[in-house]
Image (cartoon, rainbow, N blue to C red; front, side, top):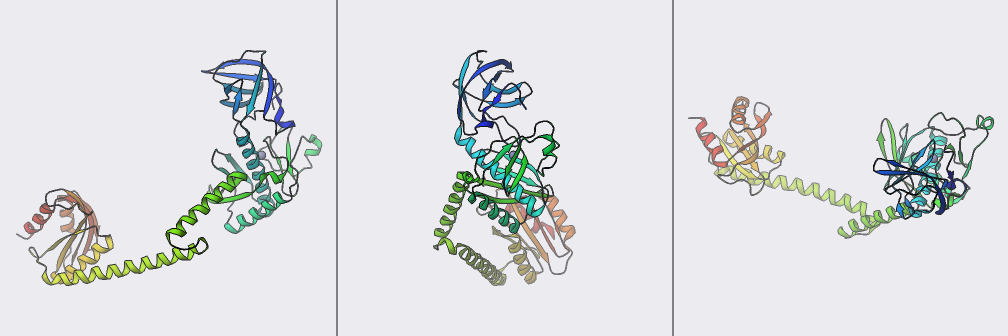
Length: 394
Ligand SMILES: [Zn+2]
């Protein structure tokens, strides 16, 4: 608690402008630390960042809570004893009030319904996250989100008070740590009671919407991303436009986009399978006119997958006894230009492992596999590789 600065946001959270007297102004590194007799600037604390805005025509860099008062950080000094005018960036502050109140409703409901505690709260400029000490699955999130929005529709008052210590002992409120002194309790009837020094909307209806947009596993619990008010609406709109763009790309309506994507995936899988079968047929036909170099079939193919390489070298190997298929990226396999090749070699009856080791060493490559099928990568030119195999059995 600060003693020498009146926190105007406590009595009226909707106050955006104010006049105040400069009590002290002290250098703080390259900057200045200014304490006023009163302020509407909320300092960073409780997961909520400091307010942004102007003081005496200067942008306020930060606001911190210190034992001597609320310290405003500025780049230029102010005259001690002077009267100054200040104003906070209301759009940003109101969004934070919506999110902070929204966070309390969600945390209170998660505690009520599932017994989990909020163990972390972070309000960034784009996303607001809350951490829980247990896993929240989709069904639980859906329930909490629905109940939280009902708290908005009921438009209940958000009350902040400093109960007497004797009364405090009988209250069942949420708190992240053991607190001392004057404790501010924020109550949202039916949803939550929590020790908090942050800024809140006065009625839950002002939050507009609460959306729990995602939950991720985090430190054995869940990290939930929360959007409220205008930000929730903006995000919903962006998502809808994305779905619309996907739907029009698939020549369908937004409400049938999921089935259209499923159908597309099925078609793609079938096409890949067909393509694989056709490649196999082409290679099988080519085995009729293949020429082996010293018992080896050495073939260069463009851009084959690992599966393709394996299938291709088995087809040729079965015909001639031994085969190696090499594949560089398209347009990368020229006679004299060194390329990186993926390869697969196959033999019907011979242990290839020693030979593959020698091949890898020769072309700074790596690879491995079974006795009759080895796969890997090497560096070299097409000519060098062909020469290597023609030298082999001399
Ligand atoms: Zn709070």
